[in-house]
Amino acid sequence: MAAAVGRGCRDGDHASRRGRLVVATYLINQEAIRILRLGVVETLTTADYAFGPARPHLAERWEDLGGGLWRFHLRPGVTMHDGRPFDAAVAAACTQRFLETGEGSALRAVLAVEAEGPLTLEVQARPAASPVPAYFGWIPMMAPESFLEGDRLGVPIGTGPFRVERIEYGREALLRAHDAWWGGPPALREILVRQIDDPSTRVLMLESGDADWIQMPPRHEIPRLSEAGFAVLRADYLYNVYLLFNVESGPGAESAVRQAAAWAVDRERIVRVAFEGKAEPAGTIFPEPVPPPEIPRYGLHRDRAREILAAAGWRPAPGSPYLVRDGRGLSLTILTAAETLRPEWPAVAELVRQDLEAIGIRTQVRVLETAAWNADVAAGRFEATIRGRVPSLWSDPLIILSLDFASRGFKNVTRYRDPRFDEALARGLAAEDHGERAEAVAGVQRLLAEELPVVPLCRDTWREVFAVDPRVRWDPGSLRTGFPGPGTCFEEDRP
Image (cartoon, rainbow, N blue to C red; front, side, top):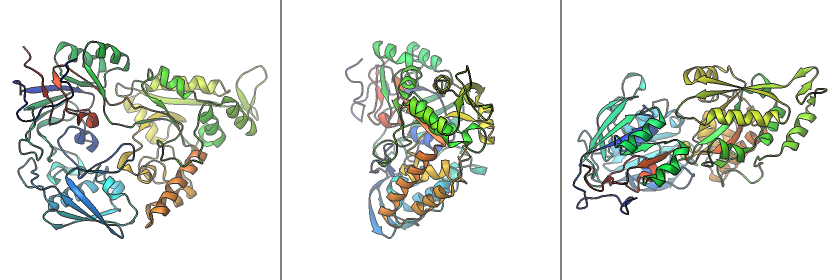
């Protein structure tokens, strides 16, 4: 590996090749989080995937004026890709337009924004205790003209170091240097981002020189790529993998079954086998120190799992390892998807199946194509499924929990409905006091840990891995996004 890898390039330190860098990625879609990672759009603050404090970005600083009122002071001299100055009026318009989309709906009733001067943005949070600076780490500063009819994203117009020359979602995007970027002209002139669905093909492209940078190589290829001299790095990302139950019908409607599953699953084995050691076991929805100390950290304890089922009346049938109650057997079907974005899921489902069989639950796995799996899960046609989630989205546990587990939550596929949870959540979201809000965060986690509509399995800390040709100097900022940053350049000309 070249010694200069990782230093990045700035003006005066460019290699002679200032041409096109080719990135082979797994997905080019219209979600804001993907566009943010391309370096096309930016945010007022930088959010932390581990729920740490927000850091300045397009906003240089901010003030908490009390009563939920915040004042953000924007960076001067920022220009958007269409040439207009990025000022408080534009920031307010970008924020308001994004809040009108489905992705921004979680904060629609929370934030009101208004320009109070050329570079001063005032934000009123209706619950005063809302973590406003962290929210702005997830709100892309995209011009309203970026959106087409029906909230579909067209060509994103942002402030980032690269602008979109053309984009075809699901296929490729050509990015060109935004030389008016406030941080100085990017080292690269062009980045061609190509969506390559097959991860093995992405590896072949890197090795053959058809790509300079690839995302999500297969886990088993990581040691070989490193030994061959490619830089293999992890981007800052947090992705949970869960066993979700349909709590409205089927075996998952019984809390004893869900609780037993939480103690029966061997998370260490899932990490070792399905993720090849490149993940971390997870017994809680959120990483430490978010979970309150009194909630259980679920781990492998099959005797406890059997005791829970026995207390609920489930006993082994004569001459059989499988459980019955009142003449009826206990069986469960785990639905999962076969797709290149999440190749580990079928293996995870199979390992969970074996774990549940070990405590007497007759279990089978059904693997569907992605579209069919999505349709069945959305319609509630499942008993249990394997699914992933970014738990730190919006950097606010209450927002993500309201989306996933409130009775009317936008992404509540488990059909979990508990008035106690809804009430505690509503109190937290309306809290004017930080102590009251913190208690609500703890309270809703306690309820979920008891009711277990989802069983946390592991944190896929290696999900956003990227591999880079050794002749490319990668920008340290790439460790956050997984994409080439403004300081990325070629170490030397390639023949």
